[in-house]
Image (cartoon, rainbow, N blue to C red; front, side):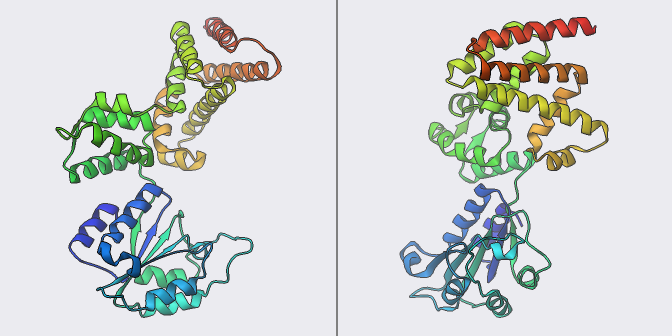
Length: 344
């Protein structure tokens, strides 16, 4: 189930004895934990909530807590975090965890305890017996990274639950400025809700005013200007980045990375790989792949390669000379435009 369904079930007191929150999206991990914490009244939390990090605490300690009766309350909440022993991860100097004890607990969970296992991993090692037992007993909550569509919907649902309205243009602006990274989107919602506290209505102007664009997003605009041989706009954007205290080598490195990605996308897309497959193979967020494919299909491989090689030469000049970065970039644009004219 997803976080929304988990919230509904917990509010309706449809509780399971064991939950597994699996996935690498930290924002979703935190949201799930917050939902479980609400099950214990505030005045009981000191005595009836136990939280244990498996990288520093033996599993037996957490299980002993789970087997204990609640202290002047209806239930206990025991949270096990980072259970690396459920994965194929090998750690040096690790604690000796009694995994068999967990298997025994899963066979007969304590009725007055809710055991929550927060596993911030892509997957568990399904070959292990304890993992098989866990999947049979636990209710699994999905905390995998959200794609663009899911991130959009999650933001809208979260704001709606808090009685806020957000315009579609505002959602688009938020997606663009965060590269559809749900963690970044969620982190900015608190600021937006404060700004919109009077009428509970979030507009595109509010998002543009409060949510900063990442360097990658600013550079993406610059990449587009470069590919279109728009020397005036490209140089203006480059100087804006310098004025924003961005280091020339950092700007150039991101530019090189963007053009490398465009080349990779163009090559692999020609071999029939889907957008999802490209994101997994290149370990890039699906939203960046989506934008990259939209850009790459409008330009030739020669154009992308010339830009990439020209930026590599800028990097060498930045490291070996004291020449003005803006002048180097301007010379690059002149040469790149000349190459395009010669190719035609």
